[in-house]
Length: 155
Image (tube, rainbow, N blue to C red; front, side):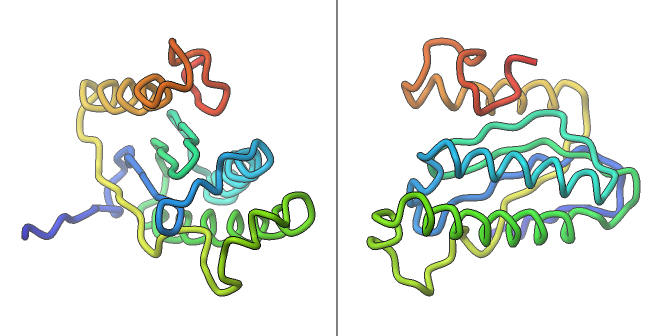
């Protein structure tokens, strides 16, 4: 198997994907999606990053992010996942305890790792942005990508 490398010392846009633990649909709830988007904005601000696009699906997240300083990606991802995980568990405990009844207390919200790769060209950036936004259409949630309110497609 070829080992994929993410170069975070270069100032490239990063295509990022991470999934809920065991592909559970923990992001089916609007409140959980709001937490993920809120933490995306908060973490980007702390790392002076820019989000070129995103989509929140019921069991995974995609984002295109850029950072002005090299080496920010790992820290950004760790904080984004840690903070959103903690807040999602709190949200579920307060508002939807029946979701938590199906989980083990020790189960994480997110899979341990994330998938990321560097975007080297504008064509690849546009391709990934379009593919990412089409997730909700392919899943049958909406007919047009711009109708999915949990993505950047409308902008």
